[in-house]
Image 1 (cartoon, one colour):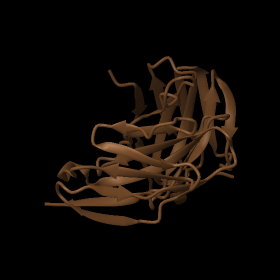
Image 2: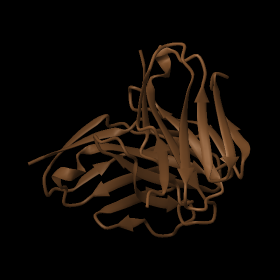
Image 3: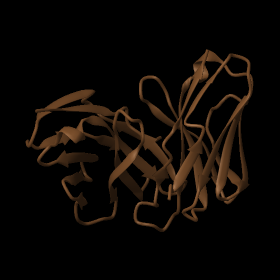
Image 4: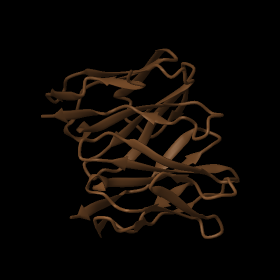
Length: 114
Length: 114
């Protein structure tokens, strides 16, 4: 069965600094996808970034980049130049492509300090 | 235009009541889902429908019954509500073949059972 581990329940980062949120996954599927979502205190789930297991390059979206290390089964999210609005819960998730089923990790609460 | 819309946003009800949450997507996606987020922020899939056909039915009490009148709508009906049903319920939709399956979440329905 697929499983996502996020070992950092809470993180703090100084404004304008970069921060890395850890994510490791466990899957036996040859084809899968990896997501990161942001959930601010308002509650909505905001899509940040996606990496397909066969993508050769690490995904980037603006200030977000995904450090994908397939052999280590890790998919860490790097946020550059943190902003106060980045304070939120961040969820790593894996997509089981054969069933369109997304398995979420437990989340990391990020607090950006001015 | 809201891509995945859920109603109501908030729902407070007494134990034993029956309630429904509605979800509609205007993305033309074939697959829709219900996820539950508990008080510890843990997100878990409950059901998925592909073109009105039930695809995923996780271990969910049979008091929960999804209904999909067409592929743009997936409603969740809950009978005999219990205190433990209090959670945030997210609807989502996706379309295989898109870059990240176009996985899109609604804004959530916060259900409180008193």
